[in-house]
Length: 187
Image (tube, rainbow, N blue to C red; front, top):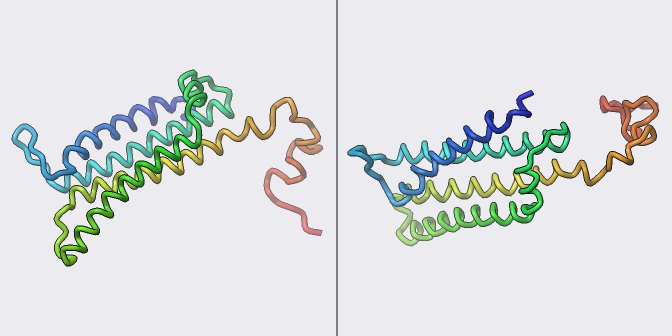
């Protein structure tokens, strides 16, 4: 199963794409940059923004897969388990909120400046792309935190020692009277 190799399938490629995107995105937030005689303009920054968001999404998918494998498939991951001891839902919500608010603050500043100048041509496109990217990363982080919290509920709701034939139903195909296939007989 691919869920058992999430590090090589998701985490490493996702981190590479994320870091490459940030490596271009952050310096370009003030305008075009020149590297080794080549000038990179707005289109390069759009690609960098996309790479940053896609890379972050791939990393999150890798964390989801590793969490699922540890919680439900019996895998062990000492790094992930040590992170769980220190990082909680609230940390993800605060981090994502800070990113989203920073992005929104940048966009609000650009909007206020644009409105004050009569809604003419927008001259701060580079900074706007940074604001949009930070807002997207923040929203992704907030919802990823909620999803990781949901993945972690299993061990808190039904301890394995309490699973019995009564909670599974008489034939092992039911959980508290609801069939696994979801169909309910109508009398």
